[in-house]
Image (tube, one colour):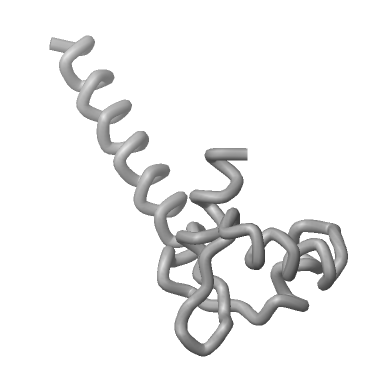
Amino acid sequence: MGQNIATEILKETIKDALREYDKERIHPNTVYYINQVAKQMNTTYRKIKSLIEKGLLKTTKDGRITQRAIDEYLENK
């Protein structure tokens, strides 16, 4: 019986931790300007522009970059 209670407490603790983690994550539809992405990735505006021109980093119609596009680029890098 004591082990079941400990297991339930552990499950609840993990669920709480995951909820907190999700709150801290950046929403995939958050958008940035090129200079913001350059700063975030510790590189230059020109480098980000080059990635966009090569089709390696996608932008929205207005030229901004979504967090999802950044994540996809970093996964495929």
